Length: 71
Image (cartoon, rainbow, N blue to C red):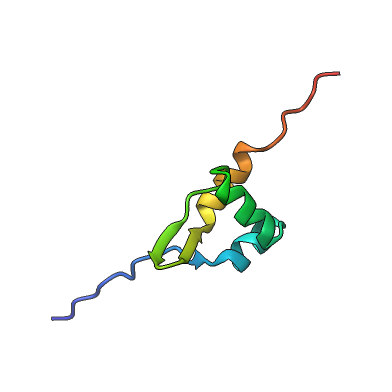
């Protein structure tokens, strides 16, 4: 008898460099937004180790999308 275990899809966690690259902002801007509590929530893995899930970053960006102005 063979038992097959399906792989568990796990989201890749991005560091500050990866998160800022994904969003097209500088790391300084990322940290400024974070310190103003105006950024996507991070996952804290240890002392000063922050990571973000890409889906959280993209959701945060969508929330800041400008609305079209009716002409």
